[in-house]
Length: 116
Image (cartoon, rainbow, N blue to C red):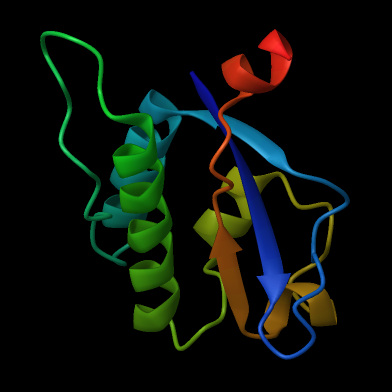
């Protein structure tokens, strides 16, 4: 399952990315490790499910909370590590990267979108 990640400007609520960035849960785990290595602290990700299917809405909400907490820790400005993970083509001085942001992980994972 992939999740669409959008990043909205906190003031205008307009997307600061060209479109959603699709990421799997394991990519959120890699981001968490990269943030920890960069001195930002690991993300508080929702738990892994060893057996059975995870509740996708619960996991989506947990991923959104984790990203929001990271941004709050960084005073609302995405860290360079997060910007790199999002694949932003914007430079660090670009207003879209330096302004406070609100992460949004929409409720529909890619699998659900493709089944429609």
